[in-house]
Length: 275
Length: 286
Image 1: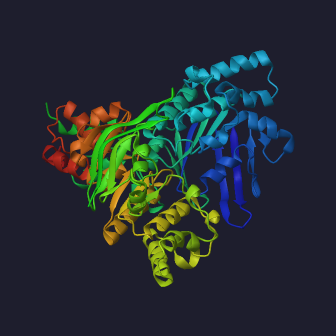
Image 2 (image 1 turned 180 degrees about the vertical axis):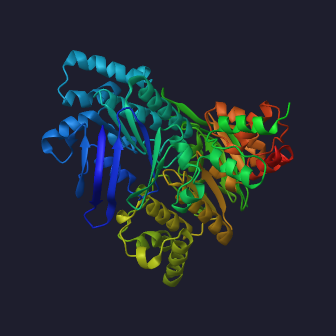
Image 3 (image 1 turned 30 degrees about the vertical axis):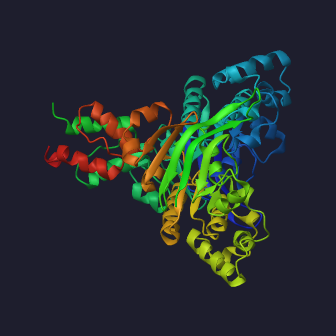
């Protein structure tokens, strides 16, 4: 679906943000990209729909080169992006109009648009707010509207660039749940950029960025076995993994690859509770 | 002397049809040197509460006194406010001067301190928040990254030597290393300046690491208040409210359900591992 090939990028002041990054994202994958602030992960995200163009190397989406001006609109239709700050993504004064803004600009016929907008608002569970003013919503609700706005354009790929970073735990949980549903039910390819390791646990694949390079890649289980390596590059492991590391170190229990509270609790019951 | 809040009620647009009660009958004392963690949902009243602490908002009814200064009284409010330093969630809104150095010196200069004392405090504050003087002093605040802006805003406040330091979501949006750095920093200048800290955070794990007392707000009222172990032992209730108790408290609650006998007071990984040790004897041999 998306192919990043040997991409380098420097900002105007000469700071290199990406160096020789290659990455293939097959259709239907749930990919998580993690890295600390300044690791290059957001720069990479902005490459995926041509918001930024590589200084060298190529990015293609469904075979179309993002550097090719002729294709840029098609690419943006296929790849929807949601950013960190919900307030910067809202453009109108009524939720329904905000969601309709994208498809309207794509020239979608009025009738079809009404259907798309309703479906998109429903998919993010915001039906009862369709006529509300976006600025009255909470941060999490605003992000749901931003996602709905992307869905209304019927994208094949959804890129979430730290879309949960400013939300409270409940808002974060809601967004994650909605994104997982979209992935499972509609088969949307999801690329999630985050610094919350918990959010990477359910992904098909995790890519770890540092200093503009991909430094680790694997399933969540594989990546989170490398706790010390992750901490060395200013990252963390999910809370369950941190606990499991301590239990192992203290000689209490070996909980294998448990990455969630549920897995850890089950593993402890199996190994420590004797009936 | 402490900050004392008595029967505090605050209504937005009081008296109008849109009247909304944000805080109801709050009684709370913040002791000298104490670290208070404030937890609650968006809309629980936590932002309204902290804005009462320096008189940015005044109670609709009830009373807030800071070291004896009544924040309802205009003259006393100025004296009370001088003791309370506030750092908001969006640092961009707090920075305005040409250079980082000038921005940090703004507060101390307003306090009419002598020039050499201002200079000493700005340098000290930069050191405490981990901003290298040579690198940052002459930079424009607008060239900084999000984390650096936040440090600059923080330095500007601590250079005033507040007796009470109020921080609204100081770690939101920071990466894990950034969170640890901010947390160490807060502990660092708390030791150095001996100030009280009031910290609002969504992350109970962050609060569990440093708070002496925890207050949980719900719908403008105090839902729980006490030492961390007294508050976090209600892991399930907090979870149902959509607040995320520290991981160890949640896991301990789950394990208790499964039949482990674990003390209610557990909220750190270390305490949980310790409590599980008796169960783990000899697992290597199994």
